[in-house]
Image 1: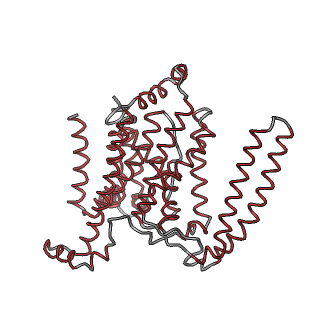
Image 2: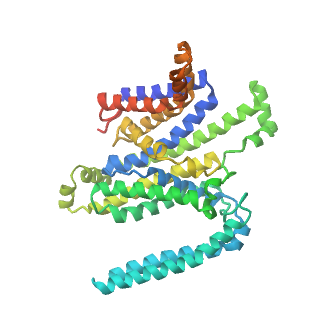
Image 3: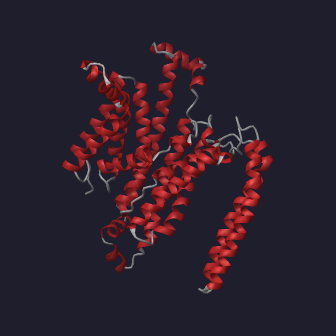
Length: 432
């Protein structure tokens, strides 16, 4: 316990030193992203640490959480709905009905050429009907003022409502992937989650009627109780506080908003930790670890391994989707181009491995440490490289080193991962 407390105290000291020697604004920005990453790492740890499920599509489930914020909290576009919004809904329902009809026919008819022909006819006719309804509606919606809108918008509801919806979106996608892949070998799950993540990102980038594609959606509402900085700067009470502390109102308003975000994210993280710890030390948690360690023995004892794998996979993805919705609300915009596997899949896995898979507190520690390292090296890298190359003469080598400075965090991350795997292969706080 003393060692674990010392590790957390050391990570906390890193954030304090960042605020003292650089800026508190930067330190809080890194802290907020690290807290969100810690929530995602908790979801991955539930899947991998509890059940041994390898999810390579964390990016996609994060993006689904962001999509929920757009559909729930962004301003509605009545002109988009009038142009073809309801036809889009009808087209999507036709597509879902086609899939359901094909599945039903496949289950109820006997195996043979007749069943194959019936399923093929249902799929072809349903697909043609789906495209006949959807395509004209999409063109009509995207043609309305594409520079500003070109989409159907959202429901205009508070962001706090969008967060659990993001979890539901991710859980629904996890159920669909799990029903297909979890009954097969473990490598099929990795392939399926990787594929669904790329499909989600491509849909967000190309379906302008949904999220405006690469034109992005901005000015998403903030969650309660986080205000806008400009509102604080126009508040007489806040200006009085700034004057009392002798601080710049603009800088103080930014720090105040980020502090509120940090408190909100920390409360969610603590709730997730509490629930995860209770689950881990319950009969359910012991059963999941038994399945992880020996699936054959667990199945022999009457446990439905596939069903339990699906259950824990859905729970982990729901937590990731919840964190993705929180991240989009904090950024006040949906930018599909920012979702990349390095940041939202590989980095989360590094956090879990470095912290200690199977241990909830280890995942949190790894997320805070790697989250700080990932963002601080981005800002310190050019400065450090400038000092290193200051004694070098001008030439192609010096120019190359300076141009490569922003990539120092990749090198630093690899070195940290290798050191941990060499000296603490089970992580900084290993599973007991």
